[in-house]
Length: 178
Ligand SMILES: [Zn+2]
Image (cartoon, rainbow, N blue to C red; front, side, top):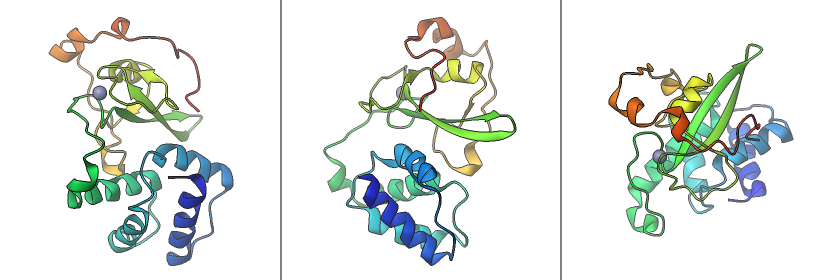
């Protein structure tokens, strides 16, 4: 979806919840999270959020993704063009993370370095274990509030043995993903 379509949808939600519209910079960050979602289900997504949330969602991109997931399940025929395979480290090739810097929580999206199935070049490539090691909170499944707790990191885990941080490409090291 384009930024203006996304902004219009957020406007509708702000009216519905009688909430002040977010700053342009916030909208742009949220759009970077959500831009892969096609325009077609936007109206459906807005209505679904209105139905599911009593208040304006605290994690708006998470709520949009959750609703989009339900739309995908309800419309499998429309999803034929984009097929993703299962990867234990990501969702559809993307890793959603958060990082706490100076007591503020920031959200970052990466392309999964394990499967590399995402073609969304706007996001840097990184490995899930690498990100955990660098202090990112990695939900790994959906960027919803209930999943933001980092999974426990166990260096003796079979997957951890196989995917040591050194195995991941480091072309985006120390670079702000946004
Ligand atoms: Zn993956």
